[in-house]
Length: 195
Length: 161
Ligand SMILES: [Zn+2]
Ligand SMILES: [Zn+2]
Image (cartoon, rainbow over all chains, first blue to last red; front, side, top):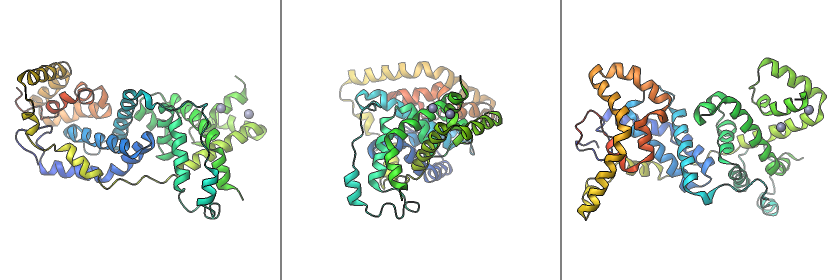
């Protein structure tokens, strides 16, 4: 693996390489999940998450064993994502005023037994997509806090560290994000819990 | 600010258990008396639960192989690519510029590390760097310049040309 000339990487020892691979095994799923919820598609999510691990690889020796690596990785991902958004101005989220297309008819056809097992199963693909669309409609600053809080379960203080804003900002962004999502997704939730 | 408005702003934090005892008491008192805030709270709770039920996206099968490929670029060929000396020279100049500035601090830190020994280095420098990787100039250089990356990523104690 490691060679003396080192194109693009330090000459790591086999132990260091093993440590890195263990970190990938441990965190790749979560890092990818966050990337996916931020970016909204597989290609960008994969790119963001892989790049975060490439950064980890390059900084491997500067990171203490037992450091808060998960938070570090998320922080890298959120910063990479912001970079991505800035490089692609056309992909900015739509404004909150634009209506979301409704797929009620389609949903009814695909999933007639929706209410029956609502608490036990994960959400079906169409609903997942609609939630993801609603997330994508948020400004990315709001999307990040709501993903870290409601999907990943981080406390405000941890989110503040990852996103690098004061706790009060986390609090107000989260409130705004949920209110916006409520406006878009209220009907889905009502469908799911009806009966 | 009225109690209603203040509480309304606190409802998300209330839901997350992120209020101080004093704020919590005010929110509870107000919720008992204000149907509008109570209904708003239910709406926010519904959204939180909906998001929590999202399935974790499945890690694509080619994720790890793709990562390996990014970490281990197919060996030395890339350095032979430059067909024209002028292009190679331009790249060399760019790389120099890109590394010169961020290198000063990061490199000095590492040179210091080489002299004070890795142990002290790890205890003094690394915690600061990992707590705030983006405040580290060397790390910033990694982020903002792909051209600089190759050199920056190398073991800083190795000879550099
Ligand atoms: Zn009220
Ligand atoms: Zn409000």
